Length: 137
Image 1: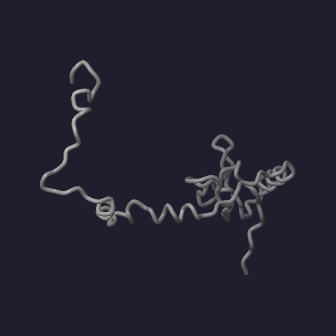
Image 2: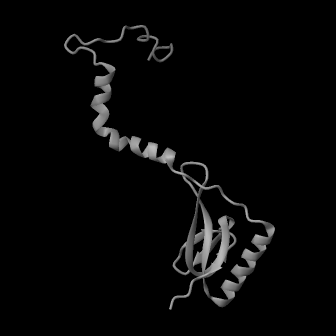
Image 3: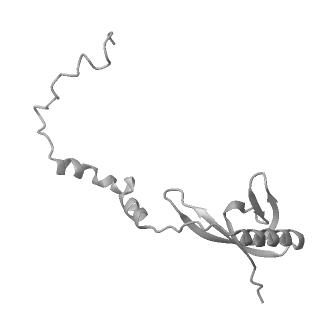
């Protein structure tokens, strides 16, 4: 390239018009891409916009103390429990509350997670509630 800007030599050329092929209308141009609409995810975008998310609830100090007490108890006794925690949405504000049941095997303060017997990890800062597991017959 010369000493000037990158496109100085061609910037003022007229846009090429084919003598063999007439210009497509905007509808024709759009139609040629319609087979790929499923791949581009327009339906998913519309669905995503309508998908509701919940807002994260910040536990009170009393609730945090209760959670800490319950976690200590579970680590000592090895009993199963149901953990309710917030799972942030990866694509938009908010998220959803999910539950995981299992035996708490360890709390990892460095990674900031609780580890259940099946290897499931729960972010400690997202934990909202710890309840006794329902005992089966």
